[in-house]
Every structure is written in structure tokens, then in C-alpha cells.
Length: 212
Image 1 (tube, one colour):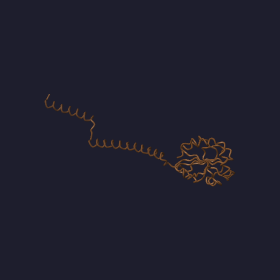
Image 2 (spheres, one colour):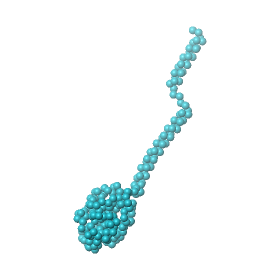
Image 3 (cartoon, one colour):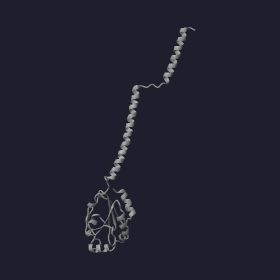
Image 4 (cartoon, helix red, strand yellow):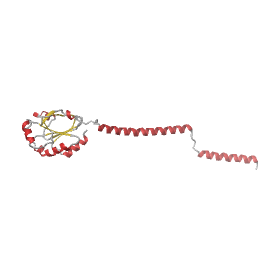
């Protein structure tokens, strides 16, 4: 065979093989590679920032709750500055920053008297809110202050804080229409809810789980 023809055929074979191999190779444009690398880094940064933002929000919520910055819904509770049975002044303002369970009751109220033991127990065991009760001498059938104090001392309850509201001025402020009446006040001084009738201790404690 002609030598030149053999050389020509060899060159054609080499060219065909080269084209085949070239077609199976992935061409990498340096610019494309750089763009892909940059995109990958930006995606990672955004993901890290999103996770950090989520952690930050969770931390903020916990700090807000822990520092009492979360707010209750409602209106400000009516202020009061009354005397307890020993003649000590007690005001709602002095309980600022604390949650308060306020109970209006009367010595003639059979439902109130039936719940006195439970109330005395609540006053001792309430760890994260204060228990205060209000009685209104010379109002709505209640005894005079002196008669009430003598009567209550005979009951032997030592844990219940009773404040005297002469003529029912504070009871009127709270719109009390019957006894007993329970008032739930948040640490921000907001009157969260007010309910007439007896409420057991378990329900009271459960209610304060949603009051800040």
C-alpha cells in the first residue's frame, strides 16, 4: 500500500478517536467554576444566617418571657390602697411586678365560707402569684369593720390576707355584683379576667399559667 495513504488513514483514525474522547469530557470553563463556587458559598452563608436568625428569635422569646416583657390583654386593674385586719396598708401598686389573685367575698356568703379552707391552702402554696381577698364592711349586707374582725379572728385562718373596703368603694370600682368574685391580675397590672362564683385551686393555678 502506498506509504502516504497509510499515513493519511492513521491520521483519520487518530482524529476520530480524539473527537470521541473529547465528546465524553466535561469542559470546565474557569469563569463558570468560579461562579459555581461563589454561589455555593453564598448559599451556605444564607443558610447559616437563617439558622442564626431562628436561634436569635427563640432566644429573644425566652428572654422576653423570663424578664416579664410579654404583655397581657385587658385593661389596667383599678388601684386600691386598703388596710388589712392588723391595720397595715396594702396597695395594688406595692404588688407591681407580681401576679395577683384577688377575691371579693362576704361573711354571709355560704359559698365563700365553704371555700375558706381551700383558700387558706392556696395562700400558702401559691408560689408564683399573690393571694389577696377583699371584704366590704357596711356594704351589701356585710358587718361593720369591728364586728367582721372579731368574727374572722374566731375562724382561726392565719394565711389569708383580708383587706377592708369600707362602704364597698373598691368593689364598686371592680363592678362586683355577687360573691365570691375572682379577679386575675398580671404582673403588668392588667386585669386579665374576672369571674363570679367559686373557683377551685387547681383551676386558679392553671389560669395563671397563661397570665404573665
